[in-house]
Image (tube, rainbow over all chains, first blue to last red; front, side, top):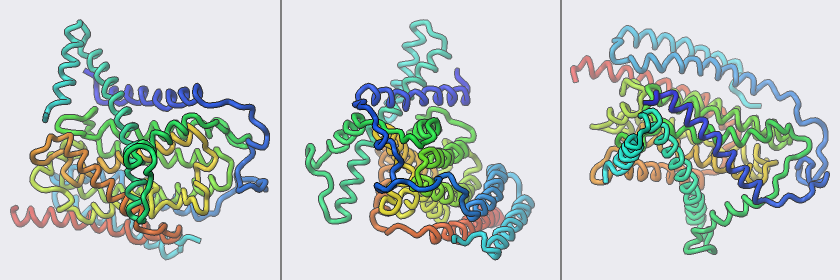
Length: 119
Length: 345
């Protein structure tokens, strides 16, 4: 018998072949004319592209990412607690309420400081 | 009818073992067959789905939708697929070639991997993983990286703006998505999807967890980049967002992956909130299909009813409404369970 995770691993290996087969099939069928330089330019509604694309993005995105990180880690802590919730009793529930309350204070702080505003 | 596919699988492995294969090899062969079935069904189902969505959207907007090829235009998607297959492959010279090429491949791999843990009927599950629900959430969230790869690799301004929006949106809605499922896990007491289905024997979780269902539904719509949350694509202003530079088969892979994700998320919602494969009269594998299709219809309905939401509204809706609501839902669920215990129910 295969174990759970080795099944998933084999499934992953099989799945990798799916896009490869699809792309190889398309490669065999599609026309392959000579590519001209104009054809390979970056599309920008017909105008030549100006300046670099890979620029620094605004700090807004970074602030969201920071708040997200805090909440994502919280979610990871919450899942094992939720699984064992029925056998843990009232004490664990109160503990988790305190834990969430700390995070809600964090969310409130980020909100007040304007980290959640999109500019 | 009920155990049709299980009997076929058993007969198949039995036949292989009669040929002298060890159980390990028989299992492996069964896994390969299951994989082929899933990939075929997923691809075939998506051609139907795309036709269905175009037809449904046509009815919503009082037009006909595709109606030329075949009865009710039902061969339209097949024609589209052949067209995409025979299109030239263009990789812009400015693009980051490796990232550009691998992005659609990763996207489709991630979305097909979601089907490993989905229960598709009574005992019809490829792997009944003990952390099935968590596996689904974590693998599903990897699609964010694929979109970022596509946008960054294209070296195109539309693509990069689309990808950045996609990342900001998807990480914002990731949090309510995961938080809303915690209420369900608290009641079911397990992350194993078959246990979650079994816990809904008497009453579906949509009744016990209505707030979680609604928050999950909204967050899932945003995660799938579907309307009214399709800011990352926004054809009218970003000409297709992260997919702008993609052509032919690579673009088709993105499209395929998006619909594969849609079916997987709908099936998960049917499993977690609508009682999974359980239901009277019909065989279990038919029930999950019916429920999945009902949820997908609601997704179509939403997309073609609401106008697109502005980016700042989108972000504040997640952080200032959905996350506090889903946190309150966890508190309510916990308090409710303890209240019922205290009442002695």
